[in-house]
Image (cartoon, rainbow, N blue to C red):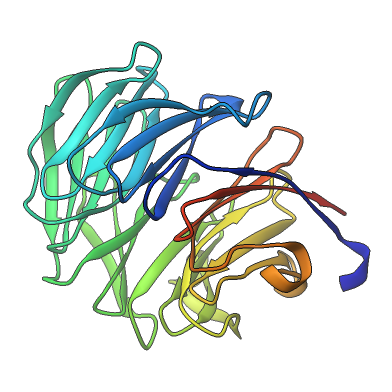
Length: 303
């Protein structure tokens, strides 16, 4: 079955001058945004992928971006400063909110709000239009690295550098917590039906948790050689992709957690350094990957 998947590298997108840390979809399937260690935030169009547009230049690294559907604004997490609201079409900032002197590792939007995970272990819920903090919770002094929102009930899963996953209700009241991995949890993602939570960590292990069984562990795979930085689901939710500090991308069957394809430098002209973020778009199912090598790759995965 592994051999039946074809991988075609369609584009290598350049322009960032430092590690590319984050990717975010942008309302329309063909649009996405990137943020990097150079403080640059760029907008891209998959119909014309070679011509990215610089929409903001911030003084510090950008680890997290979220497109806020209700307002059409892009929310940028600016390390040591807070969040910035960007009118990306007119390339101007419309507001900012000082949240923390720590790094901002993740942003996830929901309705009128955005959830923020920070390097000092705080999780915040911010009302975007008024730029006000409506809830916050600090369960650890270790970084809140990754956030996922349960599409079934709105619960907020957060992975931490204290090796734990914590589950909050939408008002950030703590519901569950457990030590999930042997090292920092770098990525958590709910399945589209909200029945399962996938997690990946610095320990290179991929785990699946059954939400309806109180987050009991139902699967574990040693998925990479080094840290799993991120994962994302295919548009039809039948597959997902992981990316790693080991420089590779791996495509998996969702139902069986079966490895289907390894995308790396030797086989597919993949990245030469850590792959930090993946985004599996609805635009012809194109897969995007962002790396420390300062590039974004565009992949066509043909099943």
